[in-house]
Image (cartoon, rainbow, N blue to C red; front, side, top):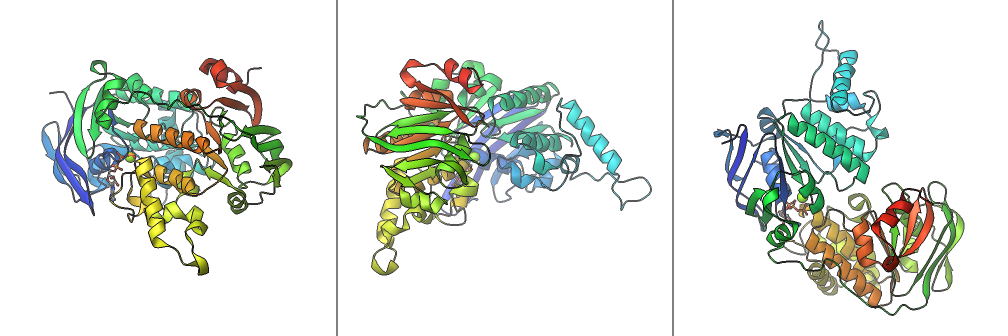
Length: 501
Ligand SMILES: Nc1ncnc2c1ncn2[C@@H]1O[C@H](COP(=O)(O)OP(=O)(O)OP(=O)(O)O)[C@@H](O)[C@H]1O
Ligand SMILES: [Mg+2]
């Protein structure tokens, strides 16, 4: 038995209508990086929430070094050295406070003579030395609201290890990060590992799991499937264990007769990032917008959807010039956007699945006199649940009770129910499992076959290579290159994405 062995045995938990965990065993050791993988809704986050004290109503046992520990609250978990960094970093930080204050939030650094006053100097000193020990360059006095997402995540990690942290859980930390930010995170992970911290790492990106993890635990449908060393398995094998079947081709092959120009963008700029954009997309085309995180892809998508004000330029759909003063006008004109920040813009977490799937298209379900046709609404939503493989107890479940990846699918489905001419997808595969990715690609092809124009914005090069026929590469708010997918390589896309000429 290794030192600082953490064992969860026979963990079960239920929510109304779902058995989220069913007798799950999980174990990991200090000084190792343990991957936890599984399809959307498999129970990864729930298992880690149990371990970090978010729930008290589970059954099963947790032991550290053979000794039983009681974890029924976040404080219990912290007391035995377990810390978690959730994916929604924003909700865990106070933006109006400094980095130092956020890191040492749970600490009380009082000056010697009085307990009532915070010793600011000491606080920033302690925070700075922690930041320095992680080889980061974030000023302790900087406001959290001024940080990038990656920096915020680092602040959360710093906060976690500011206490006596033996086990650190990272739930999909890399989903929103750029390649260089991911590299930085991995450096910190491996330093923590060398210091003897046990890291539990959840991700849907298999290549990075095989890069930084020592062991892999696979879950499926709320159950434990396997645990082994990374060196003893393969990506193909773990996908099969995750899905319960093998996944041959990730990308559908398709041959679509492209039609007339459907969507034309000329000389488009917004008041901030987007400059002089020209796009031409024909009916039946799936066209990529490639570029690194921060290149302006999301800003472009937003401008095309009436989210941001346009300073110059012309947008034409089916030969008709559009005035997109707001997203409503865009929807009316026949444009749909699956936004990147789905939890903020894409879905209503307090509403149920069916309501979410029909809001963008209420008019289609509304009979004369504005009565909503509940039956039709429900049928459409059931069909979308099937098409996207949404894991939900029913179509009436509140979206906040779905797993992260399944919320994502709802955000996508919502726009697919709407009947638009142009579909803009902004990083649609973030946080969704490999099986669901394939479903999303199939849906794109389906739309294209129906003569729609598809814009696919992503920083995932393999996906842009796999699904598009043509792409525009963005750098610093501009389109710097147009490439035919068949005649290019990931290296070439990366070259132009990085500002190469
Ligand atoms: N608070 C809750 N109420 C009801 N159901 C829940 C709750 N939390 C989780 N579930 C259900 O438990 C199952 C497991 O969800 P969980 O979030 O653990 O999945 P996951 O493996 O983390 O998936 P993802 O990769 O999509 O993040 C899902 O079916 C989810 O709908
Ligand atoms: Mg999750």
